[in-house]
Length: 92
Image (cartoon, rainbow, N blue to C red; front, side, top):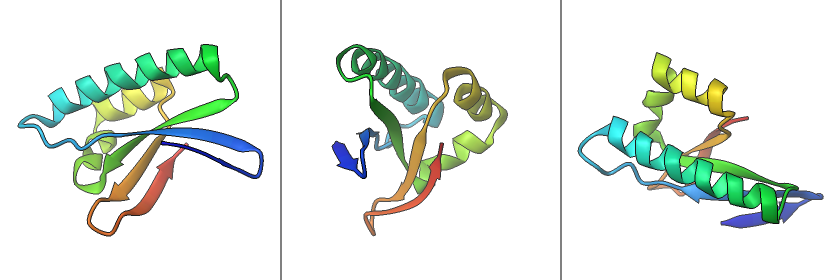
């Protein structure tokens, strides 16, 4: 998804985290996120990429490995409720 508001341009990569292993889902999501961000940096350098994660999977970012990934890879994330289709929090 891509959006623009008040001169700010964002893209959001939405992930479901429905696999058997939250760590494997995170591994796949992070790989795609870094790939897409690299492409966006070349093609649309003014657009910020966010990783959207359902609230039931967001706890992984509260664990040490999740915090490490956020800091090391500068991940910007959106935590959402898939049933309500509502954003619950942003991790800038």
